[in-house]
Image (cartoon, rainbow, N blue to C red; front, side, top):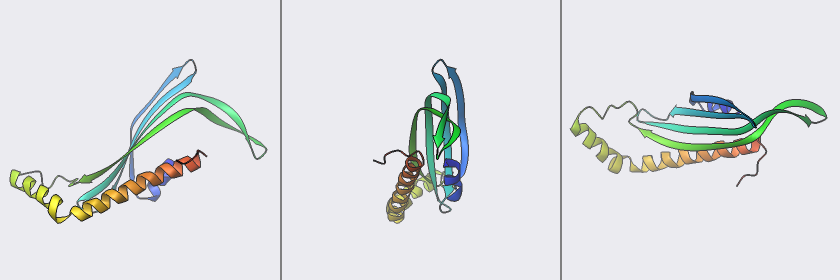
Length: 140
């Protein structure tokens, strides 16, 4: 579900970590994803997610009268949104350009930065809401 969510919104997904340990009470799984989407030539959205699953075991459940194999356990997923500016580092070469970049961001495109930060926050809230709906959890 999460993979499709990011693909539908044109994010490039990268799995930075997948670690699985067998414990006495089930598997412990750590997963880290970075999803990035180019918004303009200067701005990029990044949504990082870190999954921590404890006590994951195989189980069988009955859904609509049919038995289905699945997993059970505890999961914590942390999402973080980052607005990446000058992601190609074009303004980082010279000290004067770096100074001009600060002026550009603070005074010229300040409203655009604020708007993109709000849009990114909305996308992070949307992915959390969609995931909770998929897992049939209460949305807070």
